[in-house]
Length: 337
Image 1: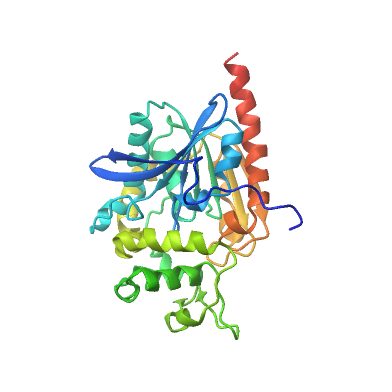
Image 2 (image 1 turned 180 degrees about the horizontal axis):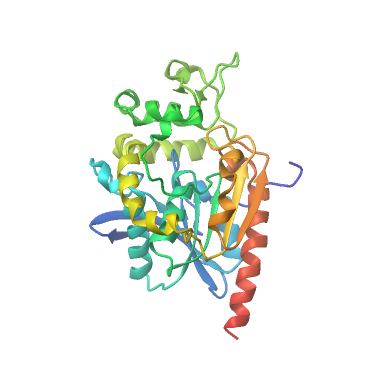
């Protein structure tokens, strides 16, 4: 891409504050970044795996420049947020209720919500469980999937076979300690071996035998990767990989929406932006086919990127966000005049 890479925050950036909140009995950690001028709205950002609130480092300066207060959450199991053992804490509904509780504690009656990877799945379900709270939603890479009448494990899809490894018992036992975690994260962020050895494949998972020989990923700096490894080492891998064990519980929670789905009334009333990564092998753009029927106002975008579109094509992602959010912010300003 010829455009210069946009500004980004660093792990020790003075433009963000590290905050904590007790949400429904769980201690959460999040990043707060305030706009320089008038605050026009608040946006919550939700990461996926294997990521952290810092995964939004290229987007936070852009969003604050638009007059938005930014809250980027470390989700359940990650970094400074608690990591309970029980998978019941890692459902979409639990995440949705915790996001709503944080908004309530901050005195917010309306928020914009953005997500990537698992975070994308969470923001759709949050808008379903708390539609009056969410004024707009965007998701990068993750398309909307409606509730299902019958439970079918995601691992039956060829592009989700890696989840057998992630949700199984062996990975978290193998990836222990900061050094090993660092190697594992480097693999998932695209580090390659000297002779083209693969770090990961959606049909297999991570090639654990290749971890020690992989060269550094080009997607993040040494300082950033060190920070990620340190944050993941706080709790280890059990909490983050619990997100791959939550399918049956999410299926049960989704039953609350089956009636409106069957009646053809499942419709998101708020504006929604979905940006796909054309080279995302886990979440290929084809998975979004037909999702328009669930949205009153859906804007689509695509970037030439893998699953890590936020970091690979930050200028393109930010341009989509600027155009989409800019229109809503201007409308909001006029309504308040």
